[in-house]
Length: 170
Image (cartoon, rainbow, N blue to C red; front, side, top):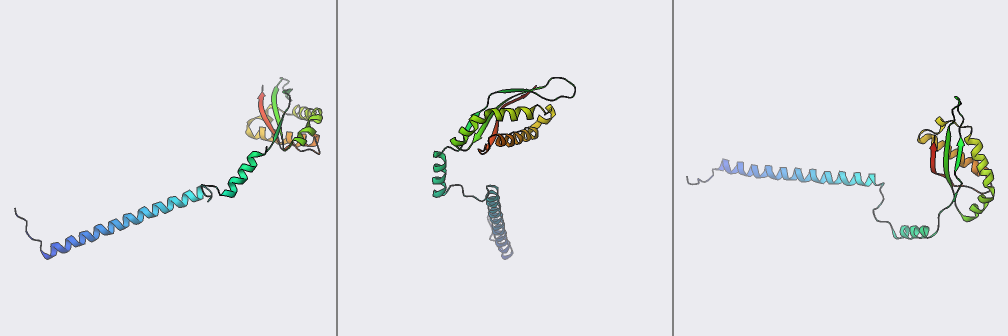
């Protein structure tokens, strides 16, 4: 079983096999490069095209913003209110609310007007039904309406947001 030398046809087939393996290697390499490019493009679009590391000016702006307080909060007293019902069954809501203002001057304007704020909240809330407060959409509408009413009550001051600390409907 000695090895016999290859004939010319066998040598050409061997070269063709080598050429075929080179083509496969080039195709696989091209496919891998395409996958890397597509993955990089997807990552770019999913991150919004922003670089992972912030620029020096961005870092300075973040540090300056962090050193200054953004908002002040004023906690309203807990309110327990009865809601409007058609069947005569009593329904109550217990709420704890905080008001967010942009600076301390606004906070000092809100404090003396607290009776107006509480009156505006209570007269509005007594007209609501329990179904008006169901779900996140109901609470969002309530939040927007309370913010509108508190801004009317404390004008010229401005309350930036009404924050629910606790809302229980019973």
